Image (tube, rainbow, N blue to C red; front, side):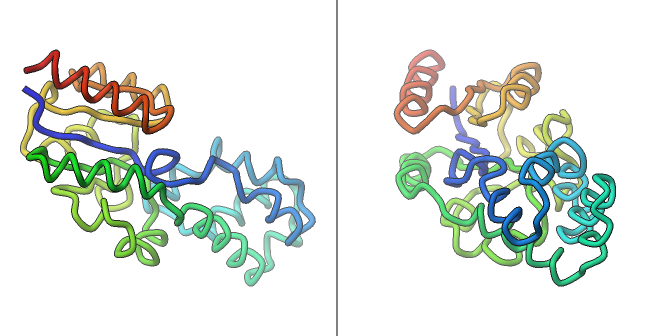
Length: 207
């Protein structure tokens, strides 16, 4: 029997798409947008794990790319980091409302997200699924990141459910594959309508 809905944040609850603010960063710094987009391949996991802050992440990125002048401009780095954080704050209210409705129907609501401290400091209290979740598992707080198995296990423990009792949605395929290996019912998120269908089907199949 299904007992819990678990949602990723970025590109599921959040409206942003990875690298959305890179063009704005280029205008601010003169550094090509593609350099900023490459941060997801290099330093993002350390940021999400809580090992480095946003300004440090972009300092390392720009230094590696050879933009040494920009890499030592602390005010610039802080502006770039703030742009990054702000790009994630707007949410899909329909997804939020759906998730909270599932919770009101008697299911537990979990959040499982690779998330830096700085975003939570600014916006956690403004995002209803974060506030009302039965358990919110954020990478920076547990020092683990998806797709590491231990972060999924932490989320399940926090919710007090077994793997087969949870349904997890994430927009990244390898995060879903990792969940499936643990026995979690997991689906790639492509939008709310498909998410509703996947959830309803899973409920019926596990009745």
